[in-house]
Amino acid sequence: MLRLLTVAGSDSGGGAGIQADLKTFTALGTFGMSAVTAVTAQDTQGVSGVWELPPEAVSEQIRAVAQDLGVDAVKVGMLASAPLVAAVAEALKRHLPGCPLVVDPVMQAKGGHALLATDAVAELRRNLLPLATVVTPNLPEAAALVGFAVETVGDQVRAGQHILAGGPRWVLVKGGHGAGAEIVDYLAGPEPQDYRHPRIATPHTHGTGCTLSSAIAVGLARGLTVPEAVDLAERYVAGAIRHAPGLGRGHGPLNHLWAFGPVQSPEDHEARKIGKDLKPWHQN
Image (tube, rainbow, N blue to C red; front, side, top):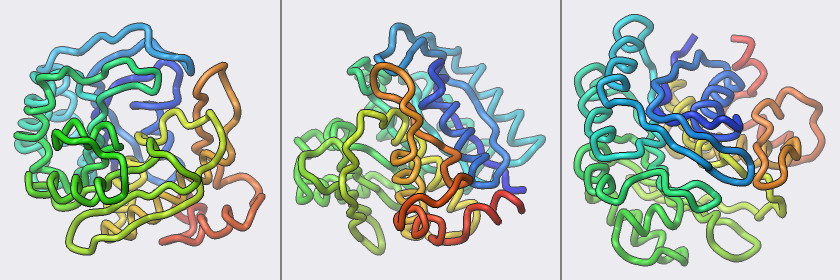
């Protein structure tokens, strides 16, 4: 069984962060492990508290998992502060050199609560992004990384190239925060391409970024190319949004196990045929 490690914060509401990552790893037939960077008190309506773990505690979690169980791919999410970014980058270089790495540069919760200190952005650019196989910023995160507004597809292309120059091999600039009936996610790298899909009218989108980046990491662990892994992840997330359970009074969580229910639409059928069928993955 392939082994996936998430390095991220805990979401008490279960929709994002470590919880969403582990659900994604399990749904896609892999063994999930975690290094918790922070504990948050949050629900579908927002974040009411954040408590960081000491950097050495995070580093030790990564070391323990890498040296005993082994890791086939890593997803990094919420890091909260510059010392945590530095500690995670050093631990990955020391214990998991060359391991496929997906970095989701989480900076803000859906309700607006800051999840990454301002001074940590430079540390992220300098020490962590150069290690990444794929970086997956949304529009506001891309703008923070490049220093200019990212609103249009043209801006996404420009931002993707700008972030690429900092060292990662691929950059997926996600367009979900933009306007319009169609969402465009732009993949910058050796084979640039767009992923276009209709916007789903729903408030239940909490954890989409975490889920997408985790699914990409699974694809990389399974030997898919980056464009193939992104394609699979995009379709998996779209299905999870369509089948969201409707929990909470705000931005509700996704249904990470949607692929094991009945096929309810042509889109569901297509999603299950990307890369490999999800059920055999789970059974293997």
